[in-house]
Image 1: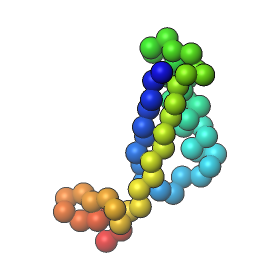
Image 2: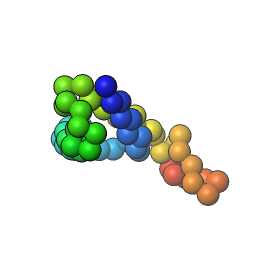
Image 3: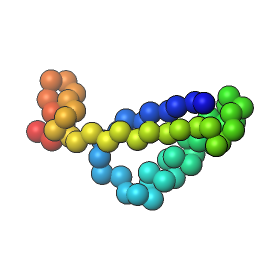
Image 4: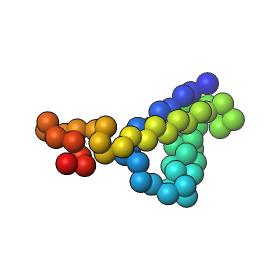
Length: 60
């Protein structure tokens, strides 16, 4: 049973997240020949205040 975790900044719509889950599931199924019913996709959203690049938070 493949588990896939997608980490991204918050702000995407429910429709975008639904499409992401569908396409990731399809890609994993095709790549590793796993049945779609066994593929789990987790989306972990982070706020910009919890993410930093080059020593600065993204919301600064």
